[in-house]
Length: 449
Ligand code: HEM
Image 1 (cartoon, rainbow, N blue to C red):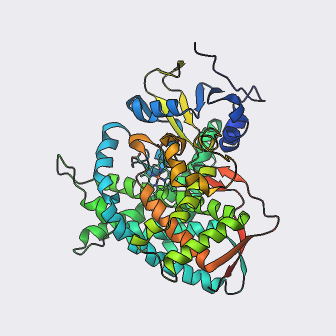
Image 2 (tube, protein in one colour):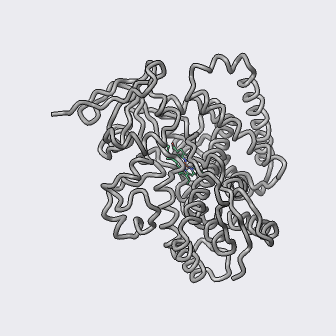
Image 3 (tube, rainbow, N blue to C red):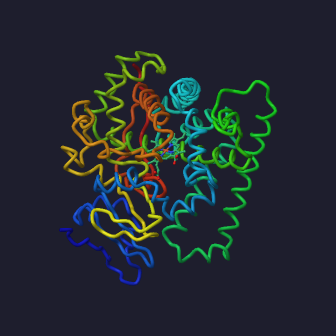
């Protein structure tokens, strides 16, 4: 017998589901936990089904994934990302994924890691200059800078500071706009009248001009650098031998830029915050980093030896997964766990709540890197940890992100002391990714070995 599905209407019957929509991270990891692993939230003419049930997740993302497309929130992202891998669907997505996947194979990543190392060395040398005397910095801004520099270097082999600064600004503004369109759909017509949409379009046009100029320049080169743009430009379809159109190249490049830095940067900001609150973990981390690396910058071959840093990274992304949820819509009516889920409704996979389920984690709300000891990981079902999603649409950049985070974390803890500014508020803000709303303000100082 299938039990009745819990329905959460919320406090305000005129705007149903507001508590969920205004802060889905807080809701799903708080009140939502008491509603069970599958519940429904009415939202105007849509039904939102929230789940943390691993069977339901496997059904939607793996077994019956052909019947699902990305939810309406991703359709707003299309306004910025076009038809890149994150927003593309169906056969066209499959072809693009097949074309791009080889760019993220181990041998390619090894090459990209060298570029990452160069950016990191430059960044930390500069940070050292700025913190010879302990200085207050917002580490979430710092992490955004260095991860954006890394993605621009590995994607375009560029480090033009003026353009980078403008790109940050555009990405931040665009994200705010697209999130507002998704969470407050009733204001959308207004944005066309008050100039907000026009401003967004103007920014995107600027971005496109930069990208097309880079692509043209790259096409003309005989000796192309070994980066992701060259990979995109030279990729050929296995069946037809065709290359990507300029429009597709633009969409994939902007997608990799957008998907590739904010997630890692927010992940690192949360980890640094957690470390500032857990000196015993920081001490063990430093010990291992010192032992494995001494005074060297990590090489690709050092990464497997940095096992405790990897546990810390995984644990940080368990508590604060940068992609805290995944949304899908059934194309045809479906049945999940015995309940009818009509076409066009939203299935909201609450990754952050899965990660805090006491069935899978001994200390669900604590920062406890032992959750990721090899024995503990083996005992847990695979989907109980899914910061990179699951199924065919799992993150293409997962290894890229993990090696980048290992590199940056190792270099940061080895040479810098950081302490959260007393009284600084820490509040998760679930935009497209989960970021610390007021940043992570720390007193940072250079640390002699
Ligand atoms: C900590 C860092 C990262 C996290 C937590 C993360 C998380 C995710 C998640 C959860 C998805 C699946 C979304 C869905 O199924 O709807 C995804 C997809 C994707 N990610 Fe990441 N990501 C990270 C870093 C990166 C990096 C570094 C890149 C590229 C350099 C990247 C590129 C992509 C792309 C292109 C997709 C779409 C894949 C497809 O649908 O075929 N991500 N990511």
